[in-house]
Image (cartoon, rainbow, N blue to C red; front, side, top):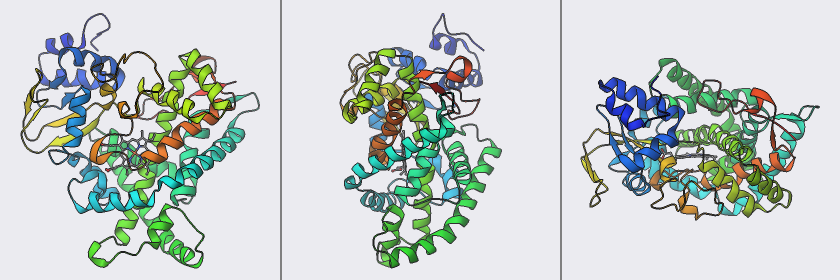
Length: 423
Ligand code: HEM
């Protein structure tokens, strides 16, 4: 392992002789210290073209540019992971009926008017899980007790995909997310687990959805996103058929659990490192001042975002950052890592990026992506993630447990697995 503590990432990268060595170093740094790596890239090489590997985009403007031009910077890299598990899906297509029609329909079913009641539902789910999950000696393990089961409960209660039990839902969510978003080295075991999860989910939904359709017909008061989908009448020419209902229902689980869990745990971990901000967060939580609490939450997450970058495949030659000194022409076939995490620290757009300043303009935050593929669950997530964190902090869990248990632990995997707090 090359130690870059005393020198620079780029010096070590440039000194490496073989392309494979360079890429090995980059992947290692992306996994272990992405913000430090991207900080140096922003000043020294904001568009890093690697030999035979991905091109890294570090600047806010370039990340937004790539994510806006989705017919050039496409989501094709997702297709081999998503298609065999959930079928053709909006996040693996550009400029097709799958993303245009399906996202429009799903956006219409997830209504802004639902949000106040979504927030109340999340508050109840959180309070109950915390009461059940706290040990008699006043300890709470966040991931197993709150941040994974909480979003699973909301997926049942609001999205309308309850699943057979918590264990199956967690297994399906983990296996699909792991392969679709974290299997950069194409580990066949990880891919096989994703396909198995997709098959199990499909078999459950093939039984559940027709039963649910009957219940929904019989009881007009039943209301959740899946029920709305089942009630929807579209002509055959539109093609929003049973297969589409199935894929889009699966997407509600795949997209919403590990993402939300990571966001909550990583934001709280940042607050634990900033006692003043934790005090302010606790005060806001106890006063139910959601605007103040949420601003602290999303700012905290900026210091350890859920995703360092999103991946795209450039399908035609393209000059990015045209007219600037960093302008670079990229070849068709270039894989691009558009670093939303780096963009949120780019001082040319985000003033004083290293300072913790709640209340920055909403467009400075790219936690939920940008452009055509911005998160479908964005509005729900703007409620769900901070509200679960708020319940944890409101209940008084604001300190790390002693020793290793009180440290955020990924246990060698792609997602946060454990963080124990005390009062
Ligand atoms: C805090 C929690 C969440 C975070 C941080 C998050 C993050 C993201 C990001 C960064 C993207 C863009 C991916 C890309 O451009 O490659 C995305 C897309 C997506 N997310 Fe989320 N997400 C969260 C919660 C959810 C929830 C609750 C759902 C359930 C509906 C969901 C469903 C989706 C879907 C379906 C897409 C694809 C949208 C498209 O292709 O147009 N996500 N999410």
